[in-house]
Image 1: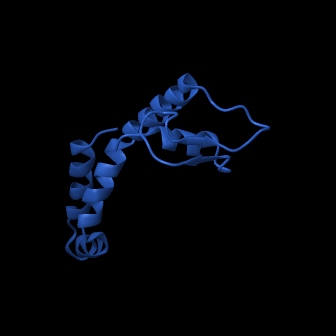
Image 2: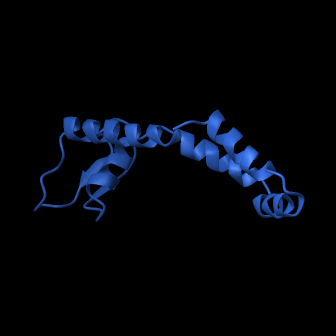
Length: 102
């Protein structure tokens, strides 16, 4: 996922003091609607885009792990391990954590 200028605006100004009417260039679609708040500069928006993208990218391992965890029938695996004295569930979780380290 690529963070956009619109994402940066939502992050910086969640109360929606702006509107967007199209266009990808930072200011081509921006309709600033708040007189009491100074409109952000292109540099401020770009800095927020970089910050948000870094935060999103830093969580890639967590999204990948969750997708793999969701494929497991963990309750059944834990029950079967309890009954059979095995470690199938623990082994599966460990393998996912090894495949997608922090």
